[in-house]
Amino acid sequence: MKHSIDGSTGLFARRLRSGAAGIAAALMMAALAPPAAAQGFRAPNVAVNQGETAVFTITLPSRRSHAVRYAYRTLNNGAKAGIHYEGKSGHVVFPAGTRKARVKVKTYRDRLFTNATTFYLELSGLETQLVSLGGSPYWTHFFRVNTGDPMNLPPSKTVVGTIRAPNYQSQGCSAKC
Image 1 (tube, rainbow, N blue to C red):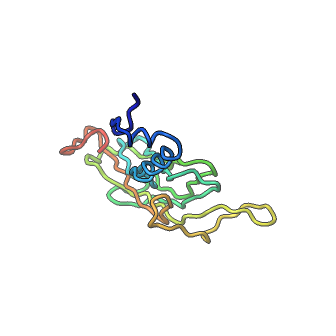
Image 2 (image 1 turned 45 degrees about the vertical axis):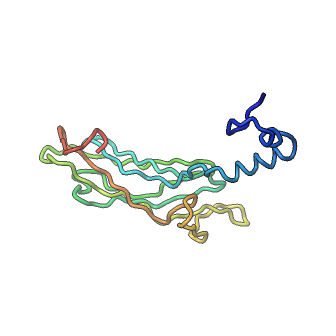
């Protein structure tokens, strides 16, 4: 004897497995099931030892049929550009069909530097690539995104890069503090 999803073997369960009633029950179960967790826009903070390269991996919630890009720039916090890390700016581009892109920031060794210090990576100026009637691609801010929907892209985001000194141990700090 076949069992239903809930393990019952009664007449009601057998009827649900047959014909249109079974299809209707399957649709109802699918509608009542909790939705799969949406993967939103991700740009996590990064921690590296001094002298290493901080790699910021930015992940879009889904692949896009068109390219998008963010302007980025590094900003001083405790760490100073040119002393603790390589200050830079530019664009991080997600070609059509991709979800991930990276921004790499080189950090420097400093013998006087004995504590962890931080800098910021600011993402802003979200743009979409469109194609003109003449066939040439161009970037535009015209298509704004709905920031209330987790599947859409935020217009800006700031993440933190932490540079650890040699032998730096913070209370409760793991290898990825």
